[in-house]
Length: 228
Length: 228
Image 1 (spheres, each protein chain N blue to C red):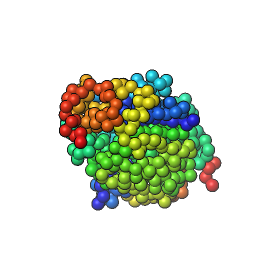
Image 2 (cartoon, rainbow over the protein chains, first blue to last red):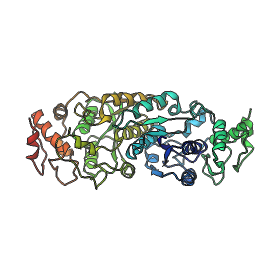
Image 3 (cartoon, each protein chain N blue to C red):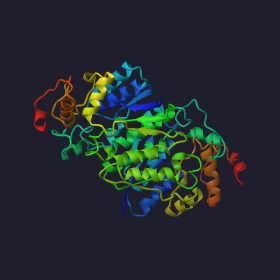
């Protein structure tokens, strides 16, 4: 049994990760971040899943980051959300500068304060093409820092790092995850838009996993052009 | 000429660092953090020095860290500030868990957003005995992360890392620093207390540097027992 702080965002990957550690018998706490996203849906779903599992949940009000880290579509309402496939160059606009290092650093600090030994996050095989701070080199370097930053060494866990999102969905279904209680869309509407990079990825991943997608999309047709 | 973001706290080391880069001809911006310290004096002095030097100044409201990272005397009013010499075991109570990684991570993100290339901080030779996150191994590991976290690699600078605080004071006097416009004390009174670890270190460092200390201490005698 490990003492694990799980970073949750209310999306498919991190919700599955939360179930993975809880159902695996670990002593789990959850932490999520409000860093000035367009909407709070993902945070609400993060909390909902933690509460359903009986996991202590901390929401960190880090919205000040929006002011500091300007120029990203996820925090600046003047930058339009790019549409299309996730791996396209335009997706660079969705990057909050150094987001992963900042969130992991705070999570590591929280794990030290809560006397936990592990911080787990839902990096997966589909991530690293796009974001530098999703690549293995970055994760390895962060792992080294986490072992040196305090008298209490913290170990970073990425159990899904070699898995596809489709694999994660299949794993989550076995663990009992209800994916209608997860949120992916960047656009901030009341439904998943079906057109932004993360919606397109969500649609294609359920299809690849051969598992029924419980999500209602505003535009369920758009993603089909990327289904090869 | 480097494009440098300097972490300033309003203390001796980081104020000297700000002067060091400005007087050295670099393009400088300054960033400071309010992470729930007992008082705001150090932040006021950080701003005052930046404004005096004509340096763009960002104060990051990160007081939410006080709620997350509980159990430290610097953020929890129920934990007494330890008195005595800085290197004593009791000083561990002044640690905010993972503070340096969190602040550096945010500074690196801000440097990326501001299109700067360097983040400089005032680590010095007197630091590393006490805090794990002031040790060279930690700094080296953080430097590696900073080069990998974004398309824009950020280089961490620690120009004072082999220098004593007494050396820093001498260097600062040559650069024109007014040390009456710096703040060290942890205790939160209207004067420097003269009894906490950082006050004792301040008093002894001016003495070692053979430079007149412009500070008024509430208890100017206490530190003498540590003057060997």
